[in-house]
Image (cartoon, rainbow, N blue to C red; front, side, top):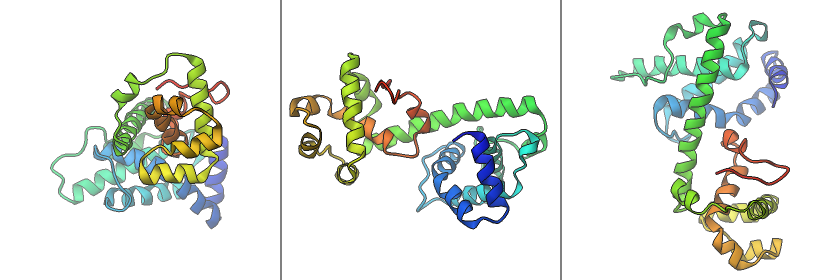
Length: 238
């Protein structure tokens, strides 16, 4: 979603549209989790970690206090608030040290400084990409896979990648296949054959790679990894 559209939604939420506010928060939980996980230096879970509750409040606070006329992107502003609130949380709870990636308390005093804003936005994006890879690697482990497995099982031919990409998107439209994969952590080959007509040997050969593609495109948490996918040509670079 472009910055103009985000600004429009944030202003509407700020002006009292509860429905838009709730939708904005719900659709950005992946972002909140990603930023918070990087700061905490571990993969946070919504059901267990207080840091995410703090970050969620910070996101809501960002909606209330965001001013597009200051020239800062909404997501950059959110990152700064989440960083600041989590630092406060760490200090109040007697943390021995604050993660080096976290901004100091004075960061919000510099939001008028365009050069500092740009440096921070670039740094944060790099950090989020690193967190996203970490989260993806953690999720792959649930399927008995690793990033190394993908490197060793990467199709060399573009036509093969295109076909795998096509199969993955066909599966995405079939909710029961995605549900089965998520629940059993196994590729439902029989159902995919019935859906796509692809041969079993092909699916078994590229099982690991296909699982990785489906995991990425079916999740809202891998926005940066999705940038490596060409939706028109079906090229993937994992």
